[in-house]
Length: 498
Image (cartoon, rainbow, N blue to C red):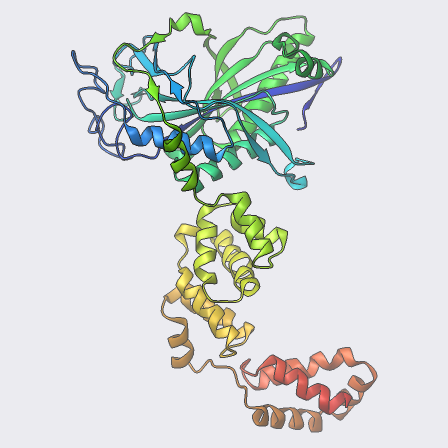
């Protein structure tokens, strides 16, 4: 699906804004010392503050502030030296206080941007910059469980008070494919920064998806005037927790809105949920505006005032980010743009590759990681962190190829042994007699015998040099794949082609 939606009366354009909720990577919650570990027993990670016991006051977790600022810096965003925590008032059974501590008027991070790269296969024809409106810090609510009892709902407050960064995009996203690429790239940056684990299955990253449709040309009027009336009425789809679901939700919701408008109806501004099983969005409640929440500065928390030196220190110690790493792989290591992009696209992949690389040929190391390792992992349905072959083991195989202890063919056999059984590649080669034969005398004897036994084939090579491959294959077969390929080719060329 592009940014165009087909209707009975013509084409419509889809406009998308995303509010990504990223759980801050810290060991304690935003306003209490309760742990944030995933998978704890229900209500095991709850302090008196999280449970909203009378008289309990929030105390800001400095590490959450640091992580939010580092995220802003990683997204080239403005860091606000003055920010304020507000109370967002609403009642829900998993929100003990009856309000959420968030930020509305003075967020900690202002405008930034994120570049999504062109990917023809993914439906993104060219690079595009997506604007980021703001990042504010807020506390998460608990979790209601409706399937534990036939007549009652249970509540687990382990997530209550966990720090979230709400990363709000501008309405610059124009297709489901762009939305997926944006969240994927954002997740990669957060992982590189170490500010969010990004595991959507564990609830560490989820998105509220805002969708509206308009006639072609209306979006350009919005860009000129800044008036949102040109974009049509938006609906917000809450808590979508996978890239595939984000795309499906946008596709369904855009078509739903077009169908309503073409039948003469109007779009109600509302909050909706995505039913992943049915692939549809369903109405949840009418969409509230800011004034409905009666925001006001939290009287228990002073404004957050930061110093320039604090920001500068965090900026100076940021890690190398994906774009910088990809550029270094190309310029310093001589890798192709494709190989560099694949390796830098995921922090775990990049870390694995750089361990394999240590003191070794970059292109050979990249080839083994990108092709042999990733190919096998994909076949087995495994992630890089689940690889049975460690980077030290794979690096050992690369070293054995580089010093000509084994050939590339033997290396694949060694890789299979390490994958299935583990062990030190060098010791495996030694114990199993897998070293390649570099003794030119032994190779020459095999070649002489083959030429003597196949004179017609030898004559054919003189007429068509490309047929020399038959002899190469026979030599490798006779020597159990252990002959040095370079030596075999050189000796054959000398004897058959002169």
